[in-house]
Length: 225
Image (tube, rainbow, N blue to C red; front, side, top):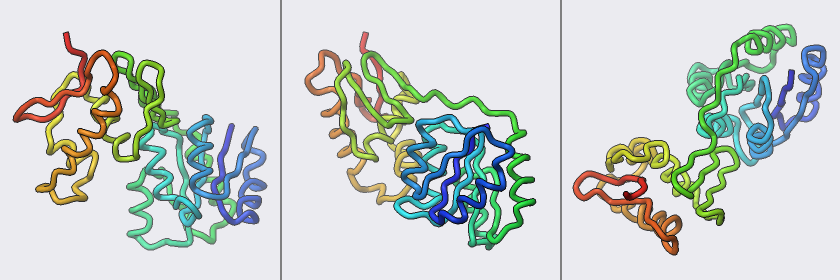
């Protein structure tokens, strides 16, 4: 049983590790959200315990990014924030359980045991590919014909969504909902601007174009016959 503890308070992390040492063959620790996300993306853990209030990347954002990358590892979030809205936010981000600090070790062990008994879900495809274009959802690397393609975070999410729907027309409304989550004025040209930038990065200089505009409908990532 491999466990990852993401907790910035080292005494608390050591306390949790000591309480679970009989249940695990390996316990790793990270002390900020970014380090925790990196470790969770590189290694396969059976259970991850995440503090909500973390430096560099908070626990809610860390779990959300982990789920967005396709990782379905069971997550127990612990926090001093115990109001209903706090718990709901943590669970909606992708945590499987939420435990309020201070907690009794016996309860932590019980919740850990419940999570560890759950059948592991198969992770979504972590490597997306169309023709010679590849996107790794875990390392967040993109390559075209073996060459690295540097993308900004929003460009990465845009390409990821298009690759998940390759061969199908993706409308402006779909991108607005799933890539931008309605967080901009729909009357602006932000989608067109990002599509243009993405096309320059993945198509310019290569033999074939993959990103196509379907006039009056939207966009499609496909290999031309």
